[in-house]
Image (tube, helix red, strand yellow):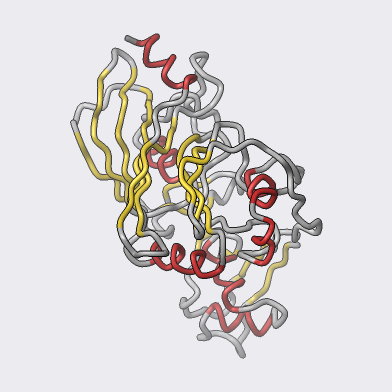
Length: 298
């Protein structure tokens, strides 16, 4: 559902979240904040913050995605589980596996598989995202942690909001990156011209990516990447912005005959265990399809 509202003489000067709450009383403040953060609420194609003060005559565009009506179906999908205790699962996600259902994609996801293995998760984090506290894009492989109960869900979510997880990725990008290491500090927001994409925007959310060079090839650079923030498509957007798109990333300009998915693998994941609050770290080797690219380039 989409709608455009105009700020009137009676409402100018109000905070955006209050204005929206008055017009959509059926939506909670947290739901409205999420819509704003996801770029579904904009003013003249510009991203906003919940606290922004509105000006007379401004046009506010609101897009409320249709809810997923069907309940999640548990499915017996094999998972590569590398760690499990009473609170969490750590999974090495293969490429082509979607994390949770979406439009036109109701079955065959990680969420369906998790619910089959842990049926008590139905009540955690909504019916379509049981226990999922972070995500990887469909064609990104690698490590994910999943909560098995509400306490661990809250513990892991709070970690992400405060100290964050230690997340590293291996990526192959187009072109020669001359520096051995670097920091990309460019805000990211929803692309106003294509809602399926993100882009670097001055009015976006703070986004920080660190990288170190692993190996230089003639036309490509292999990188170790650490994300400080966790924005949608962050690594893909940041390197496309630098004109070094990820190899195989069709959405952000990295299409190639070498591979039919983006060369991106979450190889290190560290966090504090909910049960003990002690640090733990997991590692994952490059999957066969990505490793074969490196062997080919060598």
